[in-house]
Length: 289
Ligand code: C2E
Ligand code: MG
Ligand code: MG
Ligand code: MG
Image (cartoon, rainbow, N blue to C red; front, top):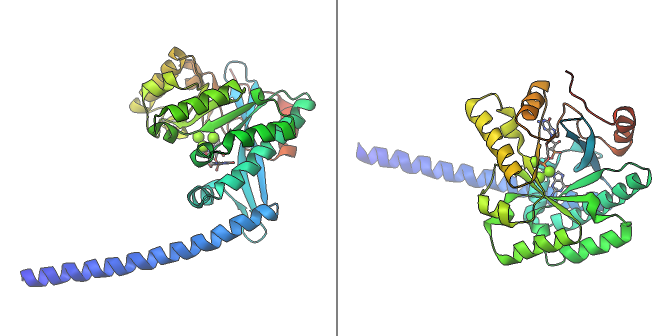
């Protein structure tokens, strides 16, 4: 009977293996198609940036906007970044796509600035982009080309950058900072965390990941939020909560001293025209008393 058990296990194993390679194969095929479509889409101008307000919790003022990419495929409609950014990061296309994002966001910030809409624009930057040798000269080039003031640009990076705590990354951050760019730490709390890098690196803003905001009314979630906000205050960092959907969440964040939020409660990410209309109408997202 132990032989039978062994046979069964082998068969299972083999089947699993077979199943796995089939799955893998399908994934690879899909990725090859997606890879090709993604590159073509840039040539065909199918990417657009949407913008989501960043709101001051105390007075409701809209203080800035985060640029978020959308892909409009003629056949598939709107495709969200989670569907293609990870592959773009993997296959290196993010360098090209990220360049377009920066250029487009800089250009748009300059237009708003000229229209008297004095809001900073936050741009998501993948680790691969940041670590590319050309990144600094690219930024310099785009600043010249668009005429944007780097003081109006926030670069959103993730904690992955700090897994490699070498002087090279630290010096890069310092140089970007000295050029006027602000650095925001995105999805804070989900990755590799250490108090020391928060102290060492010239970061201006912590963005609390939406998972923690969602859990604000659980004992652990509440403690976590309060701890981050306190830590941000101690380190003199701006703290902004992501994914705020309800008045109750906003009220709680305000109570514990969190200064800013982003979320559907104020607005979902909007295309430029709609954002302009929204901003003209509201200028703020006040909490009701
Ligand atoms: P992220 O940078 O953390 O952006 C916040 C995400 O939360 C956005 O998703 C936004 O639409 C969503 N969000 C905002 N408010 C709420 C809310 O109240 N509730 C919920 N449930 N979600 C909310 P989106 O636009 O799908 O982007 C997903 C991620 O894709 C971004 O996360 C960012 O990491 C990446 N991404 C987006 N655009 C770019 C880009 O231009 N370049 C790079 N490298 N990554 C990008
Ligand atoms: Mg972001
Ligand atoms: Mg991000
Ligand atoms: Mg985030």
